[in-house]
Amino acid sequence: MKRWLLPAVLVPMLIAGACRGGSNQSSTVAKQDFNTESSVQGKALAPFDPAQGDLAVGQLAPSISGVDLLTGEKVLVAPAGRPLVVAFLAHWCPHCQREVAALTEWLLANALPSTVDLIAVSTFEAPDRGNHPPAKWLSDEGWRYPVIPDTASMTVAEAFGATSVPYFVFIEADGTVAFRMSGNLGPNQLSLAMKRLAGTSI
Image (cartoon, rainbow, N blue to C red; front, side, top):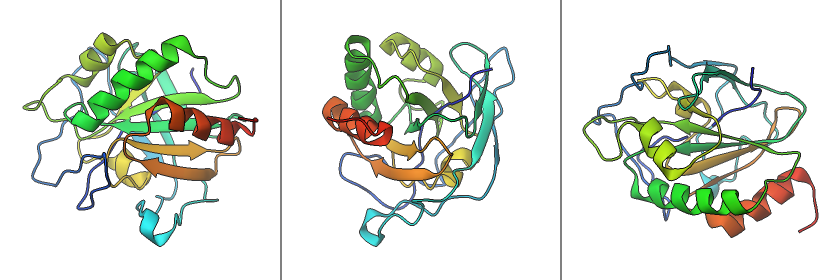
């Protein structure tokens, strides 16, 4: 069983380089040959609002159990003694599409810090919008990291305090939140954030 996993949520707040959505958008869990329903345990993090300071820093992140959309393998996102980056993405969001394309290209050419894991969460699925289904979109982009689906009611995104996508939660080895970021990070900013999380020199 893999130990870590990660994609995104949208509420009435827009951060530069991010997508937002509302309850009027149709959202469903991806249809696969295997059960993709994800579940969350633990206390939800406060919604991410950088203007108010990040109230989730130092709090224990919720745990997620789900199935990798790309491989069908079970995935558990819970403290496992290694730092983790959870990326929330929506298949129809143009900012997410640019982020995935840029990060995939960069990740193929550059190794992550050896002590840091990366997981994506596919959220706000909408079959009537572009790049559906999310598994095909990510596979076509060459994404090589675990991707778990959010529930139809966006339980995972809500639990992690997502207010827009792309959205990233950086989690310490003990399972507590180190920091969160939203919007298009790009390879350089993501690399710096991962090195910060890993405690390595830049």
